[in-house]
Length: 129
Image 1 (tube, rainbow, N blue to C red):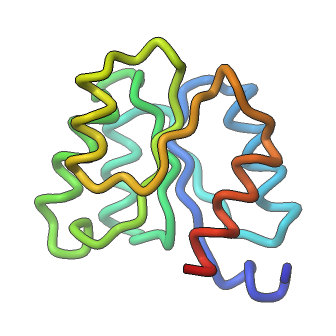
Image 2: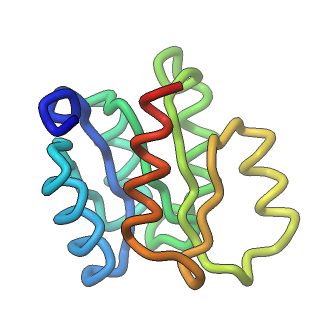
């Protein structure tokens, strides 16, 4: 499966450096090409420029929050179809979760209650659909 994965690019938009590095390293070990962004502005610019196969997007980000990134992404012709997983903490409000759903986020992963392997498994599943 790693051979198949090397053709897939994932953009990880996460401000926590340790977490970003851990997820990025694990995805790279699985054969994915991983791009990283530390804030919402950089994440949006990278997504629109590079058009990754999947975006892992935190909601609580500096410069621009994940919901506004997702809203702007959905205004773009490519971004309307982009696969996006939200990765955030459990204490997000129901309103923000609902907004992410209406913007067609495929998954909503709770950072406080998961293992990195769970994220990798969800990514693999997304490409099997």
